[in-house]
Amino acid sequence: MFHRIRRRRTDQVIIAIQQQAGITAWLAVQVPPVDSCQPTAADMGPATGPTATADDFLPPDLRVPSHDQLEGRMMPRPQPLVIEDEVVVCAECGEYRDWLILSTRAEIWLRCRAGHQQVEPRLDTAWYNRAAGPADATHASFEDCLRHLGH
Image 1 (cartoon, rainbow, N blue to C red):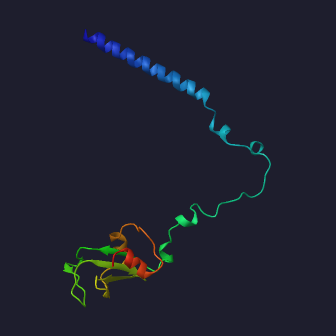
Image 2 (spheres, rainbow, N blue to C red):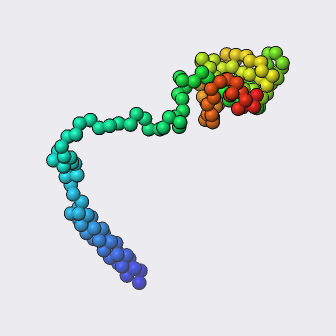
């Protein structure tokens, strides 16, 4: 009995292979060769000169300024900032959380809720780029950005 099952499976496999070979041969006849798909000069018609090109993909109101067109970027950081196992504290008021981190002119500045600013030499632009998320808005002035971030 088992030899019949094996024989039937073998016959089914052989039939499937033959059908696949037949389909492959049929497709080879139906599909034109790759060279005939290339347009010739006669197919393209007369030359009409240079074509008009669009100046950019996005309309002006959807374009985002590049990093070199911005004066700087900033992000909020509500939790304490720890650098080299040390919690960063405002030099003037002693605040240690709720920072605004500003990246401008290859420097990182920290601004506390009271408005005191201090440069942080242990951080660099690469750290800011890793820590910052995507920008959600651009602003015309520093004060507008502070208002947007709630400071």
